[in-house]
Length: 469
Ligand code: ZN
Ligand code: MN
Image (tube, rainbow, N blue to C red; front, side, top):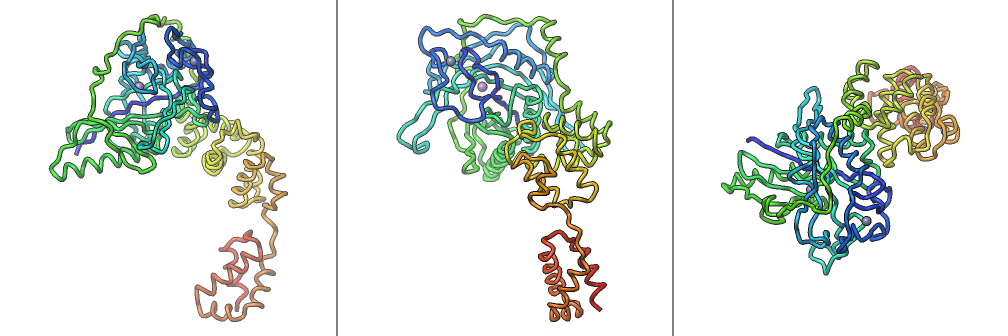
């Protein structure tokens, strides 16, 4: 059965100020500000207040458009999308409809050894509405409205219905996050997020929209759920109706919101308070020239230059910060070893703390020292992992960490330890001689405990075999 999925992603940009006023933009912050502290007459939608377009935000959107190889329009303008809801006190959202910033981009996805090209239909700018907080849940007594988010900058990126599976959709969102972070216009460690609406149809049936899916993991979950739901309907001879549903991340289900309205029903009109904006070729050329090396190019270079395995290179280039660290560290150590540890345990530990290396208080030299200690056998695998964990927590170089927490590989006289254990555990030794696995594991466990886990199980077994006659 053919599955067709198209995505509309709203990216919360990290400019200093909002899109049409000079209020601080909350998306760039690391923690939620007090409600309704970042507002002014414009973003509160008070009568008479006039919007002014933020050039920095427009430049950010242009960077994204060019990075995705879109056709930037010669001229764009803003429109009012009319709707009545308390999150939008003006009763319209300023967005772009007839004349968006860009059309026709593309994004390449890596799916194992295969790759896939996803076509972008359009990329436009708009303001985010306010945040509505339902007191006591959706069926509760009322709502609170936080206007900090009102008028904060979004780019909306709309794809063609090119996805054929939930996995592809997940990889696409990860790719968006990655490229946008490279461009310096989106920060996955700040408050701003990517929120996606998915359109999905199966077997040539009706298109169903699932709204409000945050991040890459949930897009996969939401689509998987929706596919099963629609399959079950079809199995019972029912046809999925054209409708709008919402993803509920707590329950892991999609829920009916309303039967789908058409985009035209919003009654778009041209925004009279903002001027048309045209883009000159030299302005676009300058932005294009200034684009950083993007993940795809970096991937190809890393595989070629450092002979990294594809998976390792992919994991490292997904975050600009990690890629930079890797390049620094690989100058002074074995690049393959650096690749393994940077993409592996270090990335995992930093992500756990929602940290980028540059904000971690650590120094690339520390990683170099750590890898050298590992290479020269001063640290075991496990010891190196523990050292990384403590380095991130305590922001201290590996030498200090290893000393403080006694993580170094001790010189153990294994023969001596095993001999003592044999003497004290004659019964277990007898059972071991009879070939009982349980007894073997018991003895290994005792030696492990005695050596505080620093001896290797295979080595212990060898010594046991040698000493038990
Ligand atoms: Zn404002
Ligand atoms: Mn939108």
